[in-house]
Length: 90
Image (cartoon, rainbow, N blue to C red; front, side, top):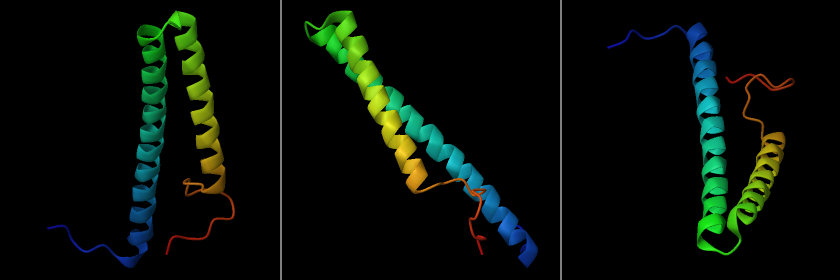
């Protein structure tokens, strides 16, 4: 078992965990947006008479809507632990 960490290192461990969580969250959100836009675009391209240009237009619309939603969510609830004015973790 790992030794018990001193009190001073607890905040450093929490900050490292929060950085890792933030990176995973950003990767997951961008991956979901890419999948949603790709599936929508490919569906319109191959399963409707919209063709390539319809699929491309659908891809762009879904991407812009998702990007706008992610940016607004990040502004309202920042996940970055180094945002100016943010209080300490402990």
